[in-house]
Image (cartoon, rainbow, N blue to C red):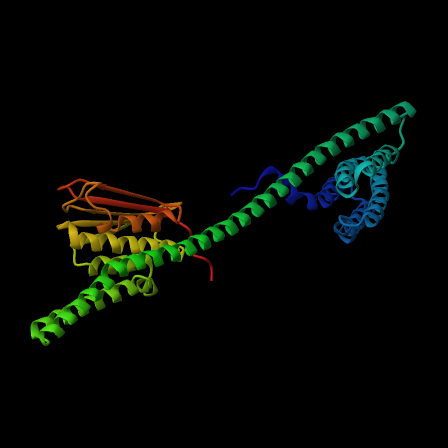
Length: 381
């Protein structure tokens, strides 16, 4: 990004005292070799190098620096009026180093030196006074321009500082939002697990108890015992699946795209995964949510949709990341079923991250699921 005019001015400002000394000295020495001008110029450069930067933070040193510079300026202007240009640079320095009314006193003193130090000619008092007033007017105008630039620069600094503060506050609020979402997610997950255990494991165990009681009444027939074993095995598998749903181990083995590929390959449905945009690491909550939505959707498709083709698309955009899953299966109506497809749970996962969740389905024409969540970057280690 290119520098602004104010930034360029701030870069050039420290070099101005040297330029306003060396440039007129160069032309004066080219015009006529005078060792005294060379000596005075070198003295001015050394004086500036010794005190100029220190005078920016110390008013007493600034007054000493300006007094010495005025003396050197008077000697140089007396040698050659070309050094009146050096006075223009000194005007800028005065407004840089002195506050308020002190700057205008310094400008007046500089103007007086420029007028009085010039070699005497036929100029009368009127001409000298006119020259002084013109120099004072030019210096004051220069000072007002410099002050305006300084104010703009300070306002710009304050704006940048404020923007940085807002960015930090936004980061804190985002962290708090994620923390709240995580807590809400834990509660929602517990509620989901409670419903799932009640609907699957608890019912399976109830069936086991019923069969055990019946087997005991009948003297423990082999058929009953086989049924018991089958129910026990199914209940155990459901328990393992429910527990596994709480631990996104897939994300511990790679990034989100790799985890989605493993899910797509392992669901047993003819699914294809495509990635658009530039993949990047996202916040664990974001990746966990998208992965679980994909797992739930593909599991439902395998169980209920009778699909021959499934397309899974993960799209990385600037501010959001979107997961789209479409199949050519049986489809359903909005009133036919909801809980069987886990739509409520998927929607809750997405909306608790301030995302959007949409479902489009028509009987006989398949189903489309779209989950879009903020592309919150992964926290730095």
